Length: 176
Image (cartoon, rainbow, N blue to C red; front, top):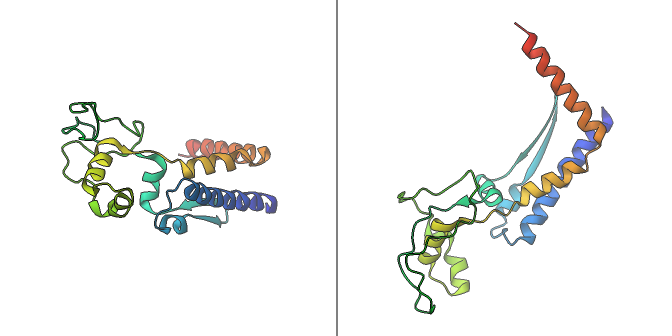
């Protein structure tokens, strides 16, 4: 049991460390609040062991991305020789479970884009509309960290807990 606890604690620490590293390397760590909010909790109870991860709610949006509302561009760029009016917006996260809904007037707030757009010399309202229509590209900072750490778990541990879960499931089904 002690070796199991040690392996799960190492797994937890590795996931948190790698997720934070991926977040900073991907330049997604703007306010540092998401970085500080990534935590793992290990609990031992009389009949079970629990391992949970926690982060701010918008961390999942950063990890999995957000589908854009889509639609058609309504204006052209005066700096672009090619006319892009009437073209459909390209989706950045087509398979994401999260999405902006077309026709929904609850677009993201402009305040989230002011600092970044000013540093690039862009209009924050145009950036907000672009994010609304195209969505947010998935960064997979947490998913990649979890999958990499899972591959390093001892095979005996995975097999032992896999069998235990199957046995518990069978006993639950047999109970009246």
